[in-house]
Length: 590
Image (tube, rainbow, N blue to C red; front, top):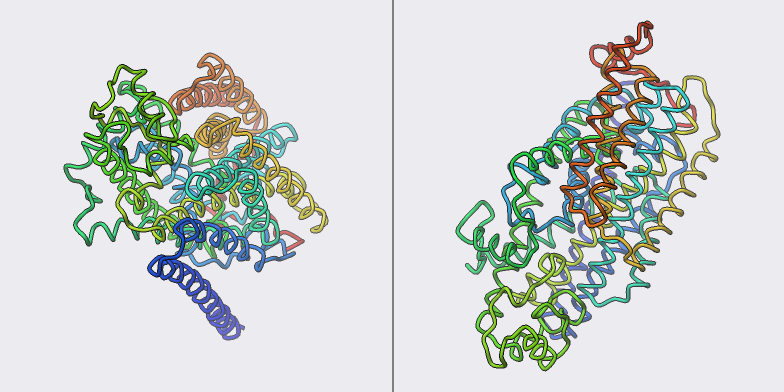
């Protein structure tokens, strides 16, 4: 039996390697052909727009080709994804969370605050919680919490919190991809929103978590190439104004971002520490961040996947920071000393799309720019300062190839990387929410049976509903991706993370989990109302910290006041931390 198992493993691995080689070759050939078209003089707009649309289609094709009706593959990737690929995919998801705050990567220290907290939470999630989740055999975080707190009220409350935070991330990821298609390729917003929503359904619908993880792994490869190509090209030419690991250009870029009001003013050490703690709690309890570890073969592989996630996340973050900083410096150099009517043509084009403000106005022509600056008491013919031409963070993230004359192919590939990041986050958010609603709410206890077809149908219905919401949000732009990510992290920190912590305490039961959930939700809602509508991510973070503090206090006080023995809780904690961890019965539909 062992020999046959070994042969089967080698056979499956050979098939996997051949498929990976085929997909890699297909992407490289497509992007290489785009570069060739750029060299022979094909229309720049076509060359820049083709790679992102090909990326969207190719990632959707990966998810579709991995369709399955097997529960073990749909909800757990058949436990067969190698740790290296699982970690690579998870890095794409984790870094996509930070894309709306990309200027913070380029303009502020990573040691504390939003960015530092995000990486701290990612480390806790991937190195501690994810291996434990894989050890239990659970398909998701909400499934584990449903077993730990089986009462109807806490179970459905936690599933709702996990599902809501995952859905918000799915909508945010879709909007990131749509904004990249619209801003960087000139696509129509309605069509781009429909295409991204459809691609998200096709990636996560037919193949579930297995399809989403493999598509996210491919997306990470596209992003690595898209970000790495312009950075490497400028580095080899000696024209990269910043170094990946430091240098004098970083401080100048940070000053520019502050002058352009793309960086918040310093808020004090206490606020930064509070934001870091809240971000860490929010990220570590995010279902889409924990999901890729479920697809690995063993807890050891899940931990190896976590190490890969952290390593690739740092690399991606460095590349994004360098791209934003280099774009900022290049834009400043191109406009410094120029008059309003003699700015570079790409500045006028970007300003017409609302991506660059010239003298605090969106302009289409040099004459409009001259009038806008005259309204600010800048006389015609007066050289402008970099602060007078203010780009948006979205523009800086994708402007590096155009600002440094690397060509349309490089612009298209960088846009492909941003689209791939957004689609990876959307697919993983869709799958995590669908799994919580369609699987965890129906099937959780030993001996409980629910038809596989019914669970898959409900899951896919949830995917369609969320994708429809993402289409509406992307078209109407009623909320920004940054606000969606911040709210998802706040819900995770205030409503999910306290129950995750209580799950390791043998005095906590259903009453404690319900008390923590109710207190966390109430505290978060009250704090957000007090903060008002114009909120930065620090406001969301501090509101989440207030909610999490109330939640933990309510849960702990309830546990200390209870004199009831909780043998199930004691057995759960002991088996999870010191035993085999298999506390969930095998799924009969697998």
